[in-house]
Length: 638
Image 1 (cartoon, rainbow, N blue to C red):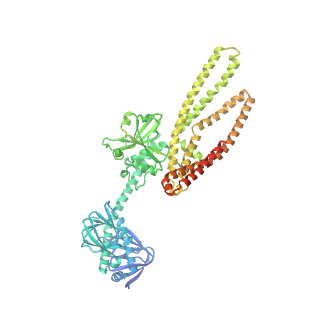
Image 2 (tube, rainbow, N blue to C red):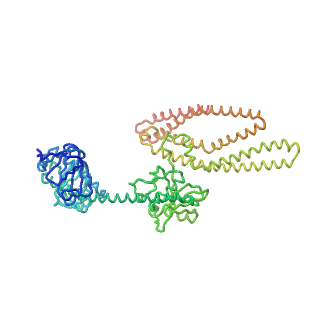
């Protein structure tokens, strides 16, 4: 039976010093917060260190220590009950479940606080101790002792030396009394050690009291370390804040100077040169580059650019800078300039070379932007020789929403304004040159033939020849622009679609077979191809055909009316049959996806089909789907 020595009602924020090691405090009602701080003459001085909170039914005991002391502060009104530690330890020795639970909960919270204040477990040989299977253990030097079960056990060292939490100041030997260990704390073996493990219910009263005193002593020993770590973190935060302030000041001054020098860019700290180079490439592509998470150290990563791309929701690909690459349109690139101390190892580019941005400024011209030196220079053969042979290309991602055809077109044609204008102007030129033919024909019929003007006929013939040749040249230029659009948009769209597909959860892939997914992915590229390139030319040609129609009205409104009727009939018939073909093409595409998926599954499962003797049934199932697809295709052709 517990011997109650007192019961007290405390008000909120009234500190209670835990300086009596013979007293156990139990929270009877309300809740309290446990703190550690320096105490002088019974008065708390300095900054309080919050440890954890105690809810109703939890216990805590105190002790007398040199520098720091434990105390509790009620959160609101709280009622605390004092118990004698001797009677409390007797209950534990008598295996009282409530007293054991109170003690282990308190020690578990202490263990969590202690483990959070130390560094991570070193990468040594890890030995998981399972006290439920044995009680005597022997480990070699360099191994780590950790409890695999989520409860409190007590260790008694018989031989050898260990470091508590890997701290050189906390050396434990066979002269150390029994001490507790939980799943969140650990021991590092210094030399070969032999030890035994017991449960809380198997402790004697003396061992329990000494073990609790050991835990409190180690906890208070680590409080200065906690304060030191927090001070370092605060100092780092203030340093980052100062860097941010300097960056904002630099940005403001840059904006003020931008009317005088349009080439001035925003710069950040030299340690973030890779992020700045990636930001310059992202700006050229029209995408936002985001910094990595605070938990990711770029210097520790094999490919730090991947972390930046991941934070920016982009994809990257490594490319080779070969031949006269700067004379071609390769898009914006992140490359690495070679330093004098560069290693021959290609993986060393992340540590021995500085990142730069390669930005296209015009057709066949590149500009190198160095974020460290804050300089720009034109890429020539000598500049290219000082670059690493590999560079990185960013691939944009589709927006996180349901994609429509117009969203796909905007995404595909982003940054292609120059080529689109080339197609537009060449189309205008071909249209104007094409209008010369009926005009010249009219002049020949009206003037050259009746007047037998041979010179005029020759002049008109030469003019039409030059116009035809010029139109052919314009169509060639138009074809090159179309080819550039098709090539670049196909790569961009296809990579974005696959990126979108790979970001889907696992549950998404259960809804479709491999063939169905493939047909859907390639269908997006097919839509893009149908709506780009030649379709643009046809739309432009259809628009400018209105000028030819106007010219026809000028010559004969009756013929123009007939032409309008024929065009209207053609449009109606094309639309009608197009709708019919569309309705018949949809089930064909679905059937093709199912058939391809089934074929892949059958090929992967050939061995299983052979063992089960189900080859005939599998072939019959495949024939059923193939016959259905063939019938649908025949119906479409009719």
